[in-house]
Image 1: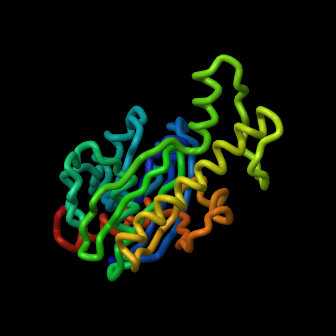
Image 2 (image 1 turned 60 degrees about the horizontal axis):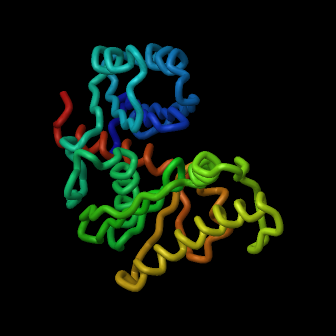
Length: 252
């Protein structure tokens, strides 16, 4: 998977952050993160990259104004969607609705653990769990609200519950309304994730769990199951998908 002398631009447009990586061949040259909505900064960054570079983009938000024009005019670009060739067999029944972040993270996990059944968990704005079988089949999984979304929902859809900010807690029983909300959300998320892992382990005893996303560090020490934490599974997966398309001459 080495492409010496080639510049490759990896872009993940997420709900809260725009993440980018630039490689020269297999060497990581730069990493930049922009807050979602920092369109001018992102466009300025792209304009500084060598024309003719390879580029892959995953987005779960609308493209910033001018973004698509720049990447398609200046780079050999893949905009990841259901038609993009990937090194997994996708068994999802509605692939056109599958989040790019989910499939990219699954590719990264399978590339690292090709001989195991894998549960890929991404804890961010939403919490997603996806199963990848050892034969390279992406099966799908589950989507539930993330931590901040749960706090906001309790505040928004009730008359008097306050909006609580997350914090480290050690209690199970909340002695105030604020503590009860914190316990319900944080302990509930932990129980949900551990419970899902336990259910999958009953079916797949060799299961490997790969865990990432913006809330992963907050949750890691609270989970009882053994997991492999990864900081940028989506970016890693996008890099693998881009290399796969380069190697198979899907990009010209």
